[in-house]
Length: 273
Image (tube, rainbow, N blue to C red; front, side, top):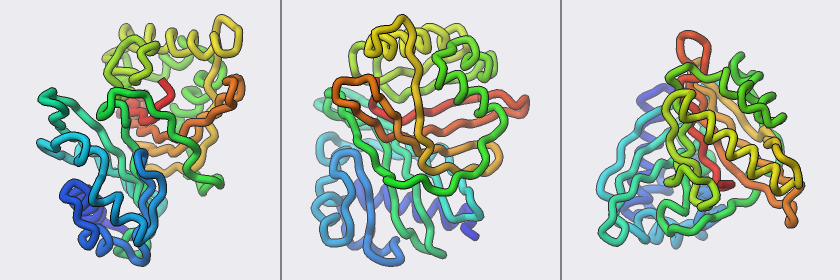
């Protein structure tokens, strides 16, 4: 069983090692070969990861001013950890917020493998499409009840149905920097149903355009999911069969549910928009 102190220490140690560019520090956190899947570098194992650690995109292409762990979720009897970090970056003398999710698969008191999720566009200013990460469907813990209608509405392009799963003051955080999704730099942060509604409408409209229809839907292949009973971490592949290149997008969603059973905050990390 992975306790909170151990999980926090390993996740923080991984991020600290990447920020400082210290391969030995990162390697010491793993039970075997260091295994990291990164948006910029792809999957790097053991020796191949050293170059990635020394040249980690968020620290190499910008200056890291501060890092704070904002959320920690432990699920599947301690076998999986989801740590959400908030970075403040200086990119060309411009302050940038970068949010990073580190998903850790545990092997006792060490990490077996890890996957990082963040928006490269927050650093480069250019939209990046990340291909499928997990090749097989992993063991999924049951979705929290409100996430069933959420996923159904997402898969049918139902704005009102999806909106109804949020608390009236809920937050949809797409970790992008534009409210106009056509900019290709990600959905922004939308507070309350009145702000979430137009964002969802535009999202479904853009998907519809690719399909030649007024409204389109989004289909997620659920690859891995775990929960602590309050937050559900879902690693997914977004299937886009109507795109000319039949593209897919890897991502992770962190759904935090409030005491009233509605979504308090949906924090989405993919690079589709």
